[in-house]
Image 1 (tube, rainbow, N blue to C red):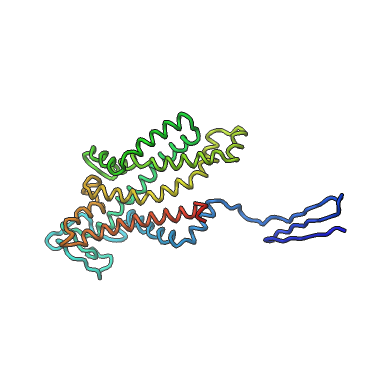
Image 2 (image 1 turned 120 degrees about the vertical axis):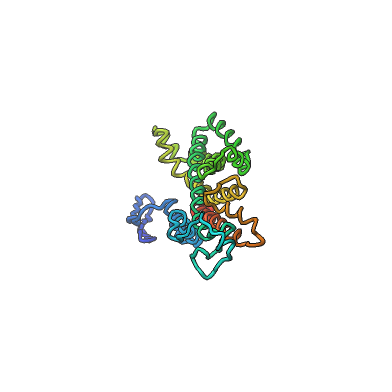
Length: 322
């Protein structure tokens, strides 16, 4: 006599009939649970929303973005106008929150608080612009090298190795010294010229791995065009490691801009920059250390915020970190 066994898992029922030899077995399954299929990006976003590291870093980045885009929301004082008679190296007034004298005044009688607020624009602009450029250039070259291989891969890989062998800051200093007037776009150009190599290597490695997947091989067998395979199958799956490297590198580009400006090779007056203020405050480290400490702390907080954001994105997108 046949025996029936019913199993229930997450709302779905499956019936299996075990019968005597010579009989036909019939398996019936109930409807699968309804819902959207899960993907890497949806899982990553779900993990990010629960990550304290992501929440804190995202809040800091939003605040920095507001400072860069709308400095008038935080202060009405001018970052360039100074009063040597009344405000020469005036000490901070820690009780006046968000006031021009909150962080004191520098050697030219300018409000340090106003310069901190307005200085965010140059650093954020350089960091985001360089990241976008190196991601597009390096990602494109890496994907082309990884997908086509052969001679193209050899040429692009050797080109990447040549640029990789140039010290990043030293090369940027050489490029910047060739310009008589250095503005924000000049620093962006110099950092982008040497910063695309790491993204290119990451993209190349990801594409080499992905193009061997079954769905890519099946698309090629069905006669899909090269552009369709790259944009529909390879690029969406190769973006995750590229985004992780780009978000972590963004903080490094902001630190590089501040370093070059501190050395007098990056941004220059009248541009307001934290690196310039750190350079000016270095001479007053004994008499008025706050002139050096305040912009230095802002650089550190900004770099730390983007590094924390990159770590949170890496933890969410890397399956090994789950």
